[in-house]
Image (cartoon, rainbow, N blue to C red; front, top):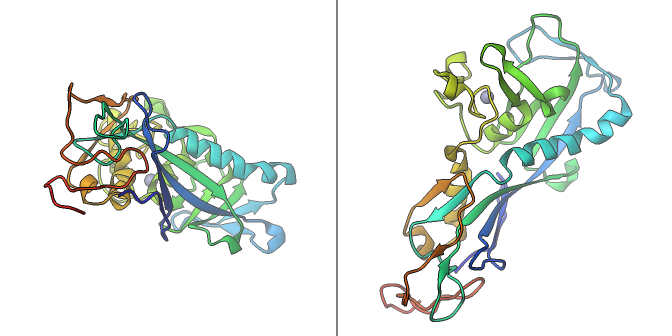
Length: 276
Ligand SMILES: [Zn+2]
C-alpha cells in the first residue's frame, strides 16, 4: 500500500502514481512551506551579522524588489533540482503497469521539489530572514540554513561566481536550501573551506562552490520514499540516476509473485504468498 501524502515537521511530501504508464514515471515531491522575513531598518533591524565578520548595515528594501524576491527564490531553488534526479527501484514497489495480472513495465520515481511561500501563521517548515546590504570591499557574509531557519542575502537568488580561479558559479539560495534538506558539504561536514571540496570537480558540486546537482543529492528523496511505501517498497534499495529513465520493461510473460495492484491500487497478497 502506498501512502500518497505525508505531513511532517521537516517538510511534507507527496508520492503521485496516478500518471504512471509504460512511458511515465511516478513523482515524489518534497513540499516545503517557507516564510520569508525581510529585514528592514524601518523595523529597527539596522545591522546583520553572520557571527564571523563584523556587523554589516542593513539597507531598506525597494517595495517593487521585495514584492518579487520570494518568487525569485522559489524559482531559483526549484529550477536547480528540476529534471535532475530519479530513483530507480531494484524490485517491485507497488506500481507496475498496467494494473492487473500481466504488467509489462515498472515505473521509476522522479524527484521533485515544491516551495510554497506562506505567512508566519501558516505553520512554515522554514522561516528565512533575508537582507539587503552593501558589503565593504573584501568582506563576505556567509548565508546559512538550518533545519527550520536561515539567513540569506538578497543577491543569493542570482548566479554568482563563487570561486573565480575555477569559474564555479552558484545560486547560493539553492546551496543553502540543500542544507535545509539535510545535505552537508561534499568533503566534510563543517563550514571550513576544505569542506567545500578538495578537488576542482568536488568544488563544482552544488554543496561545494558550484551548481552541479549530483546523484548523492537525492538522499532526502531516498529517505522519504521509504515512509510512503509499505514493506514491498522497503524491501529493496533505490538507486539514483541523473538522466530521465524510462519505465523498465518487465520480462515477456512476467508473472508477478503478488497480485499487481497498479497505480493507486491495494495489495491483495504478499510476495511470500501470505495474505496481507
Ligand atoms: Zn554550505
